[in-house]
Structures are given as C-alpha cells and as structure tokens.
Amino acid sequence: MATTTATITLASSDMMDSSLSISNTSTLYTAGTNTGITETTGLARKKFATASEFKLLDHGLAGSIMADITDDKSAKVYIKNLNDRGDGTKYVAVLINSIEIGRLYGGDWCFFPWKGGNDKDVDIDPSDATETTLEYTVFFE
Amino acid sequence: MATTTASITLSSSDLLTDNLSLSSTMNLYQNGTTATGLDECNYHRANIPTGTNFTLIQESAALNTSGANYVYIINKNTDVTDYVTISIRSEVIGHLYAGDWMFVPYSDATTATAGVDDPSGDDSDIELQAFTHECTIEYALFHVGETLLTASDS
Image (cartoon, rainbow over all chains, first blue to last red; front, side):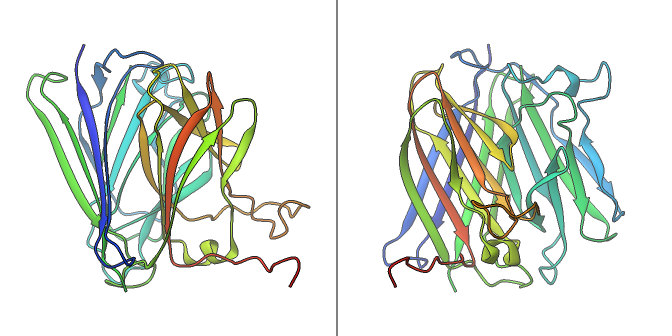
C-alpha cells in the first residue's frame, strides 16, 4: 500500500476582521478502508484550442483506466488550468454528465472525489477557442 | 478587495517509482477581472444525519451571475466507513470519506424548471447526504455575492 496525501491551505489576511487560515491534510484511501490508494494516471498535460465540449476523463472508453472507476470505489481528480488569467473572462467549465460544476479560470485548480460510472465522464467546456493547457491527474483504486 | 489564496500539495514517496510532489497556489479572483479578489465568504460546520439528502449550498441568482465562486468541503469524521455523497442538481460528483476534502469552482450555472422550492428555476444547489453514521461537515463558500432573502416578517 502507498501513502498519498492531499493538503489544502486556504488563507487570507484581509477578507475578514481576523485572518482566515484553514489547512487540512487527507490521506487518499480506498473506499471505506485505511488502505492507501495504489493507482494513478500520473500527471498528464493536454493542450487544446476549441470552443467545443470534450471528454477529459472518459469512463465509457471500454478497457480504459477510467472505466475502472465506479460508485463503490474511491477516486480523486485534480485539474489545473495552466493558462494566464488574462482579462479574467476566459475559462474552462468542468462538467460531469453535462452538469456544470464550475469554471477554472487561468491559474485555477480543483480537487474533488469522482464517483465514475456510466455517462459520468469528466468533460471540459472551454469559454472560447483560445489555446488552453490543462494538467490533470486521477488517483484511484 | 481581499487577497485569498488556495494552495494544494499532493505528495507520495511510494505511490510511484519516484517521489510525487505537486504543489499549486491560486488566488480567488472575481469573474471578469484581472486581479480583483473575492471579498465575501461563508464558513460553516454542521452535523449531517443519515437518511436524507440535504441542500448544503443554496443556488442563488447572484452566485449564478458571477460564475466565479469556490467551494471547500471536508468530512471531519474519523471512522473510515463514514462518508457523504456530494451532488449538484442530483448529479452525484463523488464520495467524501472520513477526513477527505474537496475544493471546486462553483458557477451555479445549470438551469432547470422553476419549482416551489426553486423559484429561480436554477436548481444547482450543492447537496449532501451522509451514510453509515452522522457526519460532521465543515464547508466554505467564497463568493462575490449571494441573493439575500427578504425576511418573512419585514
């Protein structure tokens, strides 16, 4: 078993009267156990220049790594938009089964558990055809 | 304007042949700006009983208009069998087991038919259901503004 940790720190010294400082570390375990996750896609990088929605993580691709991720397992997804922020209007929307979760502007990242399963692909829908570079990885069992 | 940062570090010394060490830091900016920080935040702690799917973060016209909000959720339980499902518009994103956290952008962008409990017709609430045992959840919403509800006795 491997030990993989994910640490988040949220900090602000001026949003509120007192400083905001939230920090937590989780160990990535298989579902319902304290056995560490032992598989990953590794860090991947994807460039694209399209305004059309596309599948980043295709659960429906038979025999693929993503097809192994199902409801009864544990998986975590990390995605980062490596573009510059620019004027702050360009983004890539992250969707699961055509439901938009949110928008990653240049420099933004996200980290979330992924249920997987039929039609539960993780899709990317760019705001326009600006060339965009994403980095992403999946940890799974 | 405020300066708020979100940092992540993913690390492992034994998952791969070589060490895994990935770090990234982002600023929480408002939509359509080059460097204007979000300046509003809600931070909650709640005990979530099993058996019911609850609305954790209510959709809001103001959240929808912004399109640049960020949500942090952590399951503070310690029993590894305890988990919560996280959904947006009834679409389950995934399971947060004890100790797990997530951080995602939240655009509140999905439109739906208006209903009694959803007068705006934008049912993009973030929902949560606990399984196995009651789960203690902490969650934060960083946003540019929420639609405030008029007091019923005003």
